[in-house]
Length: 146
Ligand SMILES: CC(C)(COP(=O)(O)OP(=O)(O)OC[C@H]1O[C@@H](n2cnc3c(N)ncnc32)[C@H](O)[C@@H]1OP(=O)(O)O)[C@@H](O)C(=O)NCCC(=O)NCCS
Image 1 (tube, rainbow, N blue to C red):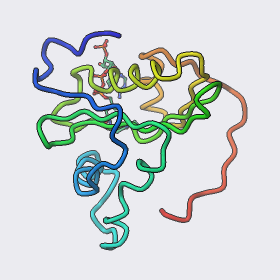
Image 2: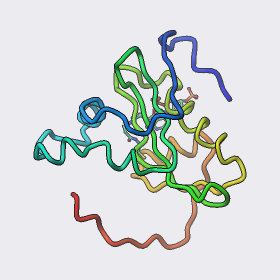
Image 3: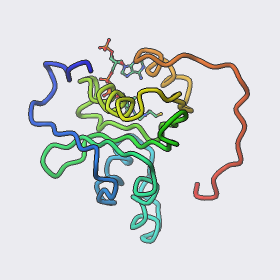
Image 4: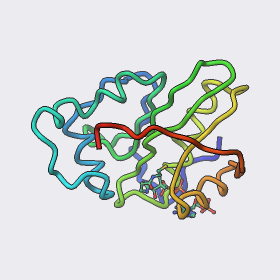
């Protein structure tokens, strides 16, 4: 695992066990990168952590009680794993935290295939940390949540 870079804040802790993260911290993190505009109903806000709680694996990065990065994985824990919602607080981006979150996920199921669906500009990021483009068809039924 590549070390978190020198310029990283030293007191970051990574958690690989906790899946029931505080919804308000997750919401703040999603807002910080523009994934939420704050228009969710109180009910949706309260359930913000459900996709994480229901995932196979969640790896989170913390400074004290502040959530500064997170990623979640759906996996059969053997051959197929899919990455969702990798996000690092803008204040802490570029310090190797995103890479560390992904590497910690991969260590849990090291023989698995790893998939991620992302925007073109972020695809470059995943290529940088070891993913290869796949030209097979990608098909979907859209979520009713957003
Ligand atoms: C994408 C994201 C998670 C990267 O996290 P990060 O902690 O800043 O990334 P890292 O510091 O681990 O970067 C690892 C390497 O990728 C590079 N990199 C970072 N963001 C990049 C980007 N958008 N495009 C290309 N390369 C990028 C870094 O420069 C670094 O390169 P180096 O090792 O040669 O120095 C973060 O920018 C983010 O939260 N963005 C908004 C949410 C998002 O788009 N998430 C992905 C959804 S699938």
